[in-house]
Length: 325
Image (cartoon, rainbow, N blue to C red; front, side, top):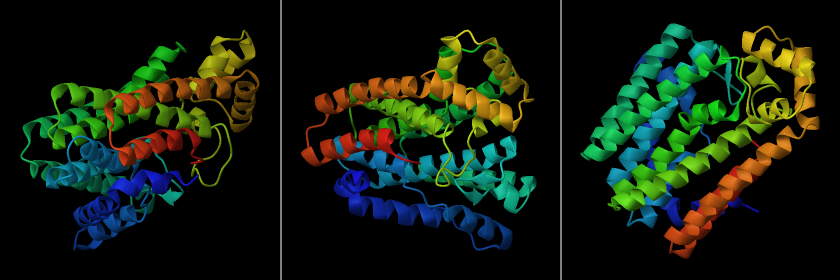
């Protein structure tokens, strides 16, 4: 099934307007900055976050210039956070493309990220909507706090799902939550509807991150990172957390401690990945995705009346579960 065509169908022209505005915002005329921004624009992507914002606005009244500038502001904030994250993580790639810090250097990457962040603030100011400005500002704080929590969690010897969800709720889930809530806000939705939309976005974001985490247990050139990359960076995600907490293999817990200590080697990662698969970690993560998917579809059934938007949001939920990268 061509999920993306169904998802975009109600907002085809609006999405084209967004892309034009976003690319204009992510441009500059001067030398190295122009080159770095061009490098980032080449990543493209499917624009799943702005698509969600546009669909939510359409559901609650209509897409306006407020919606478009909000979408550009949020996507720029996300882009800036990725540029900075690559510096923090010392990543050489982002979705199969050389990162800004690898192409230039850390100093350039930090400054480019700062430029993009300031441009995000500029676009959200064009909305003249205090609630939207506040929501985007809070998102920036939440994303930064989530990154720090993830870094500190590497030193935490406890292996539990609660901490895992706490981290992703301040990262991917927060992004999707803000997309949905701001989309509703931009269309003048009621406080109750904004809250419901935000909850839908949060559940969608949790699903999105669980799917991303599952990718780490399989080898695919499309994903843009090697198998076990999360473990190599000191991260234990939902599949392996489940496997470790539901078995008594001391040797695997020893390897998990080596992940957190940053001393695990590729062969040991391969062992831990295979252990996770054999102990049902992938199946469990897929089950949790299905649970959050049910919550999302309940929201759609109760709060979306136009069939094209209902079909688009349903396809969106299905795409998050079924996507290959």
